[in-house]
Length: 248
Ligand SMILES: [Zn+2]
Ligand SMILES: [Zn+2]
Image (tube, rainbow, N blue to C red; front, top):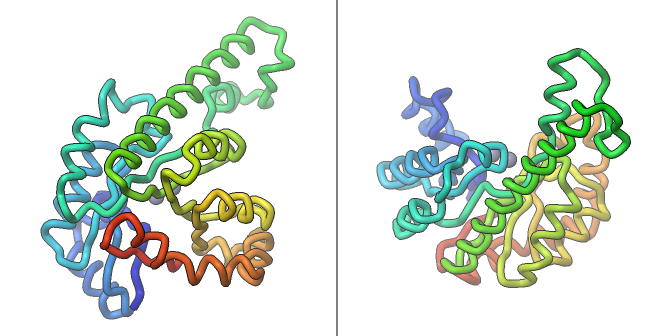
């Protein structure tokens, strides 16, 4: 059985030929699709799709890059949405430092990216402060969503980009209270081991086919890959009877 574990079916890209998208997936042997919310409204749409289509299930959460615009309280509406039996996990959640304010500002001005710690100008100091605020907003949201996952006994789908240490640090605080899958994993073998040691899973995607996906291919061939392949059903079903298989 093939299960697509990470789709964003609520995105407008699919709106025009949604039924065809589902039909092509079925024809290709994909019997279930997990659609992932990236904000409260997107999570709401994910749940609506899951209610409408029997082979679609929803994961609800707020993507870290939407942390700034997320509003004061995302937990109350998400907790409400999670009552729907079609919701199978919390996600995608995590940390993403790929577009720090300082980097974006530097890009706009066509100047070289600077390191805020070694900065001297007032502008650079300001950018460093903005980066700090951006990161702590994401961390705060990540923590709230992890707390919600613990409260509801749901697993999590983790998004991590350029924020490895902080992501692992946040998760370490939760120990075995929460289990997640690092989706679209592109890290090293050591990083994969770290994730697995903490009780989480990693997922491969098309990255294995990239030229620079060498690390992932090494990982894929390693003994950990065998471990991970045999773990999903068991781990993901421990907390809820609904099963999610991790295929990519
Ligand atoms: Zn995603
Ligand atoms: Zn992601």
